[in-house]
Length: 409
Image (cartoon, rainbow, N blue to C red):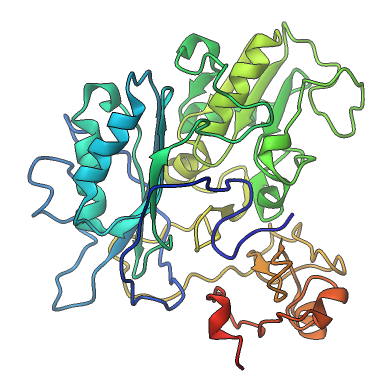
């Protein structure tokens, strides 16, 4: 699967309305922790208040300008709800964000909204607060991953999109706004309890991309047999190939199916499809892996969490919110991450983080050991090492810049 250096091919933009701002923060992103906050307007039981005074108040992990540069956060939320005039809704959001330093992907259509964005904490939280003032989105689960010192996305793409989640055949025909058609959501603690009592009548279903599983997953979850979620077909094929389909031959009436993904939206979509296929006992993890790791820690979890922005990989660390010293989080393998293998030679990798192939025209996202990285000059295959547009090997966690930075070197 070929991907751009910052946007995975699973989610290709199509004629977006794009706001581009001058961004001089071109150095690689350095993350310092991974703690998520469940935001509620009233009452607020979290450390961050999304009140009307948000534009002047700061979370306790945001220090003053005299101590450091601006602190950026990454925000994720989605909501399935009927929107009568999505084009007008897009215009409203564009108007609110005018003059605010927000980068990311915000998609809106008749079925709701799906947003992943980054920005200075003041701007990022102001947008989340504004969203929740609308009764249609008042109970949306806003997840915040603090802090970074750079944007996690190159620009803002805010537009109407026919499908909030990319799936073969589309999703506009699915009854996504009908919550009764989706899986029953479990809180992180309820999910943990379910996992601890797994038996033969329970199936743990990872509905992400295969490469996401490669750096982290719940213990006992089978690797998805697709490298892009849009091609997922668990429980849909008439084939009885149990090796590739964990739902093959299961009892649709009595088997409990526990579904999980990064933030929850893919589970909500796919559980609707399975519900239509006759599966009765469907459960999903509310807030996804992100919320689980924040609330329960890495219990039953192995490895890191793949994220769809320039950070790529987040360890389930319990770093405090006020840890803003800018030091990079290390992605080194430990005793429970020996599952991660180099895509080239199959040896254990020392870093739970994908890299892009140095061949610009390939750009494959892959896991690689240090030996293969050096032997193949940062490429994924020997053939790519002789490509015309070859970029240098990047050290550490750096991401490739635009081609013109390397063209004349």
